[in-house]
Image (tube, rainbow, N blue to C red; front, side, top):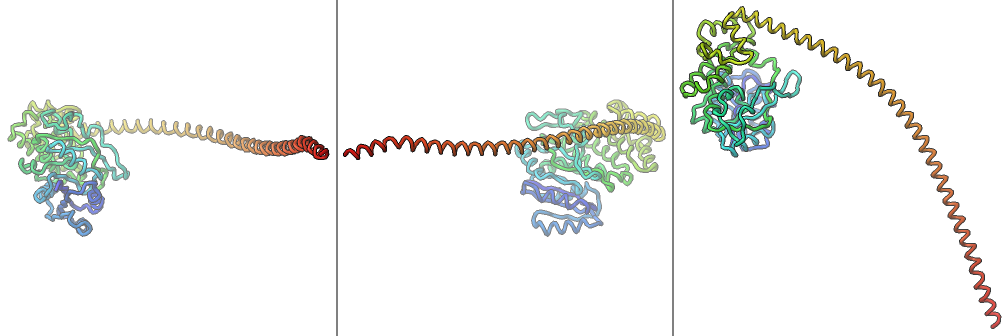
Length: 428
């Protein structure tokens, strides 16, 4: 069997049907679907049972107590039979050619990992869109020979392709031989698996097609519940740092790791929902050695680039309260900018409305003229038709007169030889 698609399922009844349908409708058929029900309490299990009955032999369903998506994916890996491992979240859905294109790329290049581009499916507006610029940066790794590795650009391997497992496929023997595993977390569980795979891979290939749809704008998204597991992001980066050190590659990858860790941690801090959890996370980082655990301390702080560097500096120097004030000022400026842009946009819209109204009046005037021209044209066509009929009548009369003249002349011409013939006969 060429491929196994592993789908962790937890209370996904709203979207699970579309996810499974996108797999059943693939243009490639030599694969299995392994769904791991991670202790769902909604109708997800019923949907899975109905799918098994409707597609016998195509879908394997495992059940376990809730342990998070990482544990669910590991259970799927243990029973997967495919040569290649794909992962798809139960609220996302695949393009019809996803498996065919990726299997083809892995077969032709012999790569351990394949990566591809994605669509964002905006749930709020029910449409798909491109991810923000810079979300994926394949241009950081030119693929002239069809493959690349982290050594081609050590600073970018972590940030160029995200931690997502669902826009990547992995050779199953490669995963098992290298003990590549998801972290024991509910959030950021994919960091350990994805980065360790990208660093361990002998060869990686990139498929320049949008082959999966990542659903955003969900009101019930797990990403909106960071407060339930606020330390997972710190623990995940600490675990990955230890793994890189054990592999003897941390020094080569330090710059990229520190920037990726700083980005992940600051994003988490900026999107927490309660003041209590915000203070606990800041305390873990600033007072309980969290920054040291993830390598953002000492000289390494200077490796952080871009706007994250300023956010990090303020948090470390001014603490949680100072950072919150700084952040509010930044957001206020941002809101002011948005307000100014909105005012400008409203003015532009008003101008466009005026222009549209003027164009509308011009169109109405031209339509009236066009209507008049059509009427004149109709009158001229009617006159032309009459002239044509008159012309045809004259032609008919001419031909009649011509025929009559030919007959008279013919009789006159023929009368002479007939008269001569009679005289000759009389003399005889």
